[in-house]
Amino acid sequence: VDDAGRYDVILSPARPAGYSGDQWELKPSVTSLLLRQVDFDWAHDHDPTISIERLDKTVTRPRPDAAELEKRLHGLATQISDTAFFLVDHVESLRRDGYVNRLHEFDVSHVGGLVGQLYYEGAYELAPDEALILEAKVPDKCSYWSVILTNDIYETTDWYNNQSSLNGAQARVDSDGEFRAVISAKDPGVYNWLDTAGYSSGAIQGRWNECSSTPILSLRKVALAHVRRLLAPETTLVTPEQRERAVRERRAQLQQRPLW
Image (tube, rainbow, N blue to C red):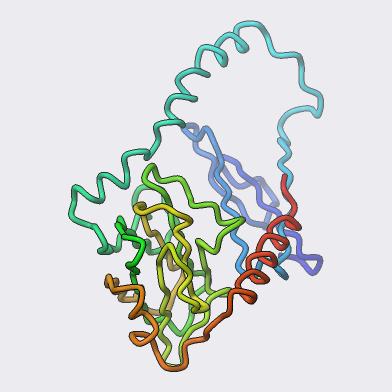
């Protein structure tokens, strides 16, 4: 990254002669490039702007021929179907594997996931008067960590209008280094609340990226009325008015992020 905050990289089968910058090998089998952008502090992080230029072709591009358009149209139905049904049974598979109100950790870097990223997830099932307490020791160093909720077909719970997700910049960590969060339909009046938004079942999923140690997580179901006595004495409490302001601020931060 140069002094102006600009990063250039060349994607090519081999390093161009005389080029000393970053180069990613572009193998003949490659058909796409995936870029994942993560904001930690929604109010202060700056989203990057990105452009891609093909250097071995002229700037102008001719009109696509009929055969190419026909090929794309024929593939459209399959793409839509694959996308619509992708992972819709994932929460059910967690239940079948016994991960109900339980978590398991996994690493998908061997199948194209990010190297250095650890995931955890499990299905949840809660009555209106029940809650789950999630606890994890936060590593001394961690580039990014978060936890989110989904519904039964693995759609992320509406995190614009509900506090149904938290990351390391938003959450409060207790003085003993533990992150403790409460998952429930009703607001327990604690800062680290994850709102199920009316869904009695769904999934919990989190990730730890580039951490100095491997976190060990626990999840336990309790009566909602007993939540506060089971948390650390220093747990930050919030009033309904403070929660209202927090969700409005959350929504404002998201609306002010560039969408492109």
